[in-house]
Length: 144
Image 1: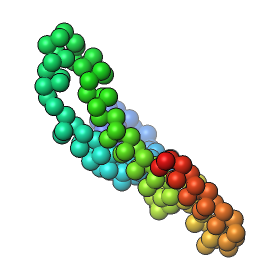
Image 2: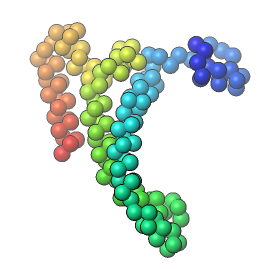
Image 3: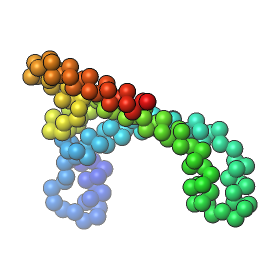
Image 4: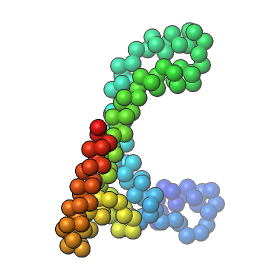
């Protein structure tokens, strides 16, 4: 109740009850971003580190603006790294059930939570296995 966000709100003049972040959809999203953003950064760093700086310099010499250089030179060369990071994070996050359970308080269902609940709470093993196979099929489709 006395965190950084609450102090900022009070500094801006908010005097009401401080907002609760825990057990909200925002908390789940923030937790997933916190967990998986480093993987995307690492996947994007490799193509950026191999990028020849002379390409951007040549683009600037030919009269392109910084935005045009980024859009037409740098971004197309880094798309494979961005795509690899997106696929990697998708595969990791689609089966995640711990983060939504802890930060969302069980209020927000993701497919990982649904599989977990079918096996351990509902004891519906056939439906849980079918959901797990559907999850694997989705992951394989994304990876292909």
